[in-house]
Length: 258
Image (cartoon, rainbow, N blue to C red; front, side, top):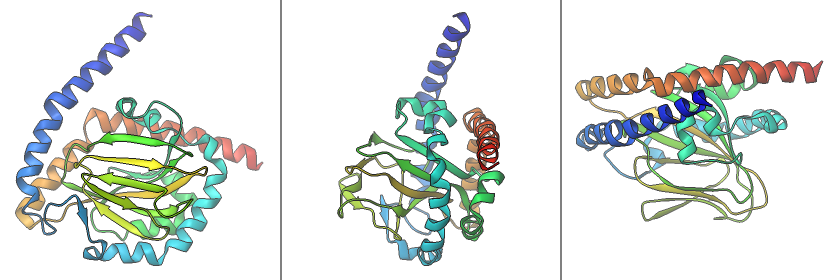
């Protein structure tokens, strides 16, 4: 009981530090330098401004085919908060699951072995730090939220988008994004956004974070901050949680295959 109380206190303290100190500091730095980025500072971007989006869209059929095989094991996928406990503030059910390939530059080697074509394509993207399949259950809603540092630019490749056009969508500021299979959406996740899957089927996107491009001097500063975040206790604990899950997951599927 005491251990549980201590754990809850530690979690609340970390959340206070994150939202009262870390987040304002990172956003303050990010907001000051983002406007000097080679792609500017916008909530949404034209995907054609990034050459690698064309590579993703061209290879969409192969990426989807690989993931459909992995999706057979979706009941074993972890919820986002199982990997990073701070996400409990945002998600408290099991209807938002993940399948990580890369996290802050760290390769999930066993998962990548199940998606070799996808992994090879991702490794061609300049500044790619994180990539995972984001799996939303039917009628799942992710409430409005913001990222903590806009030195990163996020993108979604629509993998499985059920229903009619617009049934699966995202609001970012006052703009609405309607996902399409095989199409990439590029955005800044530090702007307020929320997500809906208004269908009776599962929605899947491949979420990718890349380092925002800058001139050499600001690039050095931005990359340094991204690396500091990657070495923080928040990220290191999340990656350890994922490593432990990944080991269990692959042991289980080997037993099922045997």
